[in-house]
Each structure stands twice: as structure tokens, then as C-alpha cells.
Amino acid sequence: MRVGTTSYTNTMLDEFSLLKQQQLNLQNQVATGLRVQAPSDDPGAMETTLDDLSSQATQQQYSSNISTVQAQANSIYSVLQSLQTISTRAGEIATSAGSSTSSQADLNNYASEVTSLIQEAAQVVNTQDPATGQYLFGGTNSGQPPFTVATDGSGNVTGVTYNGNTSVNQTAVAPGVTVAADVPGANTTGSGAHGLITDSRTGADLFNHLIALQNDLKSGNTSAISGADGKNLQKDQDNLTYQVAYNGNVQTRLNTASTQATSQSNSLTSQISNASGADLVQTMTELTKTQTAYQAALQSSASIMQLSILNFLP
Image 1 (cartoon, rainbow, N blue to C red):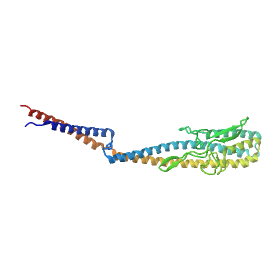
Image 2 (cartoon, rainbow, N blue to C red; image 1 turned 45 degrees about the vertical axis):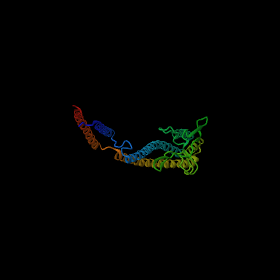
Image 3 (spheres, rainbow, N blue to C red; image 1 turned 90 degrees about the vertical axis):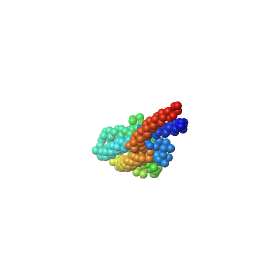
């Protein structure tokens, strides 16, 4: 009896193709570490993985936002330290110059120093965010220097103008949670974020108070220096103390949000691995079995095909 080889050959080729595809799939799993790479591999696992990947992308954006605001908060803190130093020195000058023993020459020297303090303060409050180039204290109008200093022909400061607004930028750091690190340079509305230099709620008005001290020193008005000037400068110091505390609270919130974001991201990575990741030991075992089966099929087919040919011999 002659053996029909067409049907067997087709079956053999189908089996070879199936075993070869299984080898390729397993080799790919070993190379990528992923068990699920297409919806057909495991529809349920693929859906879960895609959802987790979307959540992870969102979480990574939160982490990026947190890092950006943390850098901004650190830059603001450096400015606050500088302003506190300036404010403290102005208070010391008011205390020293307010005594009856100060000569006009001494007062003039103090006045020159206060003028320098005003210029220095204006420079630091016009600080730009190193990462974005935006000005830190202009509110949401952060594309231009928030403060402009005017001087007379003698170099005395006659006024400082605020060019920003009272709004602040809120940044999302977690689902439903936003944080604002920036501070408006001035706020006289009585609501919203406290102004860094001028705030109607605290009575702070650092530049105008320094200008008043400068002028009183030049005119020798020691009663104003020891009275109104000293009291007003204390309001400015109190406002700066509030700003430092606010900044510290923001940084604490950001540190907490950063920890939570890292934990959530690690959890999602684990979930993605569990849903679509390949068990390397098991996958290698399956790959070895498939390779063995493929080699056995080749040998078996070769033997059978040889016998089939003999059936056609006379």
C-alpha cells in the first residue's frame, strides 16, 4: 500500500510553524521580561497593564511637578534669607541712629547704607527661577522683573514700583492636591497669598519703610527714626518671618508628596510586572521544552519521510 504524503506533509509543516512561533515568543519573553506584549497574549492582563501604565505616566508627571516646585521653593527660601538679613540690618541702623548721640555725618553714612540695602533688596526680589527663567515674585505676571527702582540725581531711591499681580501658580502634586510655592511681591487686597514686600494685612511695606528711613536719616529726623521707622521695620521683619514659615510648610508638603509619589510609582511598577511580566525560570524551562520538541519533530519527520519515499520504490 502506498502512503499518501501530502496530508502528512501539510500537518508536519503546520506543527513546525507552531513550534517555531512558540520558540520565538518565548525567546522574546526572555529578552524583554514581558509575558504579555499584545492583546491576544492575555486580553485581561493587557487591559490591566495599560491602565497601570496610564496611571504610572500620570504619577511620573506628579513627580516631575514636585521636583520643579521643590527647586522653586528652595530658590525662594534663599531670597527670604537675604531679605531677613537686609531687614535686620535696617532695624539695627534705626536703633543706632535713633539715639541723640548720633551726628549728622553718622546719619548720612547710615542713609547711604540704607540706600544700598534698598538696591540690594530690589535685586534679590527680582530673582528668576533657574529652571524656567520666570521671575519668582511677580505672581502669575512672571515674564518681567516684578520691581522697578527709581532714583534721583544724587542716587537716592525715590520709589519702588511693583509690576506683578497678586495671583500665584498652583501646581498639581497628587490627585486633587495642588501646591503654590511662589509668593506675590505685593498684595494690598486683604485676601489671597500674603505679599512678600507689601501686605495690607500685616502692615508690611519694606521698600517704602526703607525709603522713609533713608530720608529721615538724611534730614536728621531722629524722633521719626526711633519711633515710626523702627515700628514699621518690625512689621516687615514679622512679615518675613511669616513667609519663612509658609515656605517651610510648603517644603514639608512637597517632601510628603514626593514620598507618596515614589511609593505609588513603585507599587504600579510591581503591579505591571505581576500582570504582564514573565517568570524567567518558568519561561526558560518552557523554551527548552519547545526547542526539544522542535528538534524531535525534525528527526521524526526525517525518518518518516524516508520511509514514505521507500514505499514508492518498485
